Amino acid sequence: MTTPTYFDYDSQCWIVDGHVQRCGHPEMMNCQCYGRIHEGEPATAEQKKQWDDRLSALRTTCHVTY
Image (cartoon, rainbow, N blue to C red; front, side, top):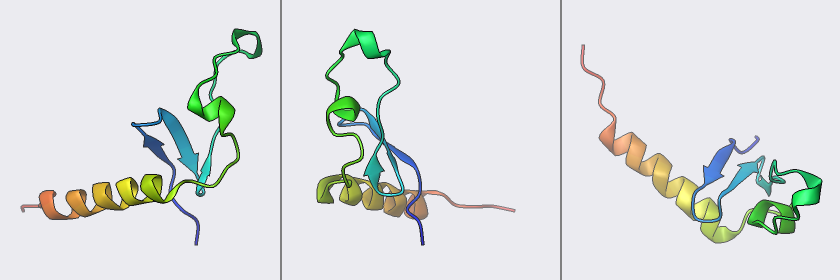
């Protein structure tokens, strides 16, 4: 089972299949943002927990009415 793609708002990076994705800044910018520095690393336990917490919040706040 693959992990969904989500944005880590604290680190300002995308997590895809459980790994940090490189930022989209141009090479020559040398931005030093989280995605550039941690590209390819596994998501941290805190990043995974934040995602799980968001899913839990969605499950308890989204109600479908017919």
